[in-house]
Length: 292
Ligand code: GDP
Ligand code: ZN
Image (cartoon, rainbow, N blue to C red):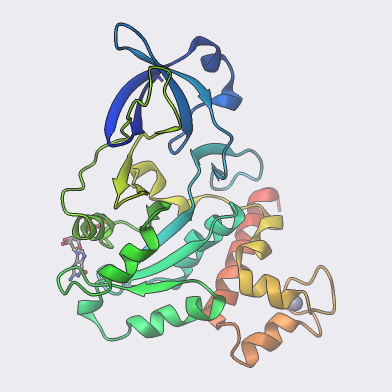
């Protein structure tokens, strides 16, 4: 990377380069969302001096690879998973991949179903996620439906918008904040030594204190790989009920006295979620044992 960063601070953008010693360590590689300290020099050039401790790190695991992750974004507070009711059709298993990757990264998700002007089944599609404990929002851009509710979730937080292509992520963002352009971070200089600022590759200020990360490279997080050990933790309601299974290592398949299967039977866990769990588990095991 050429090492030019756009740093947001109080409403303006500063172009900054990395200070030499930061370049040398990959551990301190600056990520989108990082808060940094900037020094502004006499010739008005700026250098990033330090990277603040991160409150979250989103890590990418390549599909089919069981080992190795790469940090791709810092300080994201939540993942906004967007699907469409139609065009393209709502695909619960694809949505579950996005929420799963959010979970293994320790990040909360908001599940959004857009294009609700095209069908009546939006609430029905959202129901498994509501049951799992996720905040859910149904929206329609042309009908201005659900936009205020979604805006409330975004205020004051760093949100990553993600979901399949064509579901209306850009349309939603533009409707929520007219004038939002694919702009990167800004910076304001408090003093020539800089202050608590945020580095942003493709991150847009949103509302008063929020940011939206809408990076093409992060729109596909649902296709990232998962480690088998991570898969149970990736479904919060399965994790919760799974504590009651007879066997500690229950995979919620054929085992006797499985509390998860009991919870599906009595309607506390939706079948589509258990199906997604099993698919992801199988897939991650195959990736972990490519010879099997
Ligand atoms: P993205 O790939 O997720 O960013 O999707 P876009 O924002 O580019 O939208 C894809 C297409 O869906 C465009 O033709 C939009 O006009 C259309 N679209 C977006 N939101 C809605 C909606 O709520 N209802 C309908 N009917 N169409 C929408
Ligand atoms: Zn079980």
